[in-house]
Every structure is written in C-alpha cells, then in structure tokens.
Image 1 (cartoon, rainbow, N blue to C red):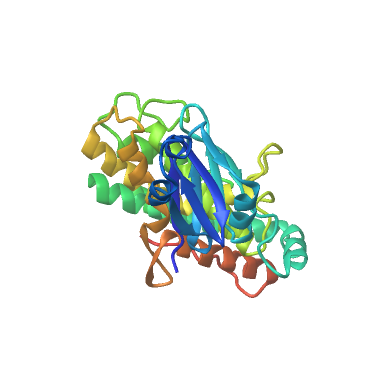
Image 2: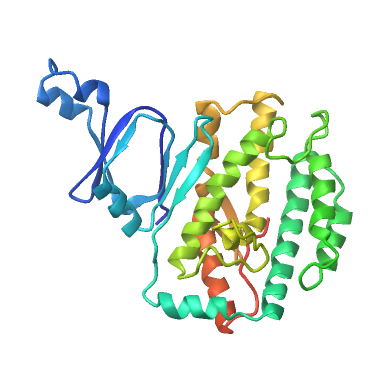
Length: 310
C-alpha cells in the first residue's frame, strides 16, 4: 500500500489517540465559548500506519512526543521547515529492520571496487533518465547524453555526470536567462530545492526500512552530511522531480514562487508513476525496491541496483 504524505502549513495541535494522528485547530480549541460537541466536529484523525511522510511547515504547530514516537515506529519520515518554508530537518527511525546489525556490517564492509561499480550504475541510470526528461520536455536531441551514459566507467573517473548535468540544465530551461542549477539561484531553483528535499526524505526512509545506514554513501562522503547514501541513491530519481518542476514552470511562468498550490503539486512526488523492473509503481514503492536491491548487492546476492527507467 502506498503511504500518504501529510502537509501542515497552518497552526495545529497534533497528538496521538488509539494509533490515530489527531489534528486540532488552535483557534477552535482555545475558544472557551465553543461547545465541546462543536470542537469535535473540527477534529480530524488519520491512521498513523498509513503515513509515509509528514511535513511540518508552521512555527505554531504543536506535536506530542507520543505522536512522534508512533510515527517513527511506523517508519514515517518527519520533515520540518524553516522560516522560508524550505525543508531544513529530517527525522527518521533509528532502526527499521530486524537484522539491523548484520546489515550495517555488510554495508560498512563493502569493498571499494563494489562501491565504484554501484556508482557507475547509478550515474548511468541518472544520465539516461535525464536524457529522457530532456527529450520529453523540450524535444532536445539527446544523442550525446545517451553516449555519455554508455561511456560511464567504474567510479565515473571521467566525471561524465558533471558533463551531462551542464548540458542538461542549459537545455531544460533555455528561456530563463542565466539559469544554472544553484541552490541559491533564480527560480525554479527554489522548486527544485523543495522537491529534492521531499525526494531525499523518501529515499532515506527507504534505506532505513531496508536496514541500511543513510550516512555511509557509496560515493558521497561529506563529513558533515548525515545522508550521504540517500544523496547517492536518489540521483536517478531526480529527473522525475525535474520534469514535475518543468511542468509547473510551464503553468505558472519562470518567476514561479513556492505558493500553497505549487507545494501541493511537489508533495505528490512520492506518488509519481515510475517504471521499475518492467512494471509501473508509485515512486515511494519503487524506492523501496531500489533500497532492497542495494542491500542484496552488499550481500553479493545481486550485481545490479534496481533503478527506475523512463
């Protein structure tokens, strides 16, 4: 079953009652003149077991420790946002698999040649998906990107990822003057930042459920990054976010802002339809297949990570 994403952008009281997330409105709860029966009509409940991602995007949200515990026990990723309404924090369960210790050890002991081969597969899949998005969105001839994808060697020593990215971003938004992919750059970088944060949470959640440490990457190794492996494994999924952002720019224009309507569209990322293993699946389900296959690569059962194909 596909897990749901809940977004809270207004003040709210969030608590737990009989395995249900209870949503209360502060303006109603604080009003002493409002009868209790009337207040109950405004209380909404959601089964905790149905939730995969919860986004908290308001300074006046109050959440109980009991609810946080229940969310994490059910492998739900909890995202907090800053004053600019951008995701700034991610809370995940410390364990998500019964054989956690064994899986950690196999991941940490993975050989360098294996990690280089897995990174090669990751970059090949990313460039292929970028090429498909570019072709679908702009009609751009992508023969060069297909060649770069096929030429990626173990560990990508030629840095074909960067070469493909430079061509891809220049061609995807040619009508936006001076556009480059930069976290602090002009729109739609703001949308890309938001979308990638949601994607990162989904991938990190999948890694934890598969019993892997999101911290230890196969390529990324920044000492200050707690989610290096998530940043590795999300690479072939980024083009799905890029395509969604491209369609939003088509609808709202190049100076698009993170309005509630735009955020609502970006929060559909976990349910985007992707093709993996020859079948169609929601992105969140596909990520679970990817992270499970990664673990089997660490154990030697598989030689390839299962990535989506556009």
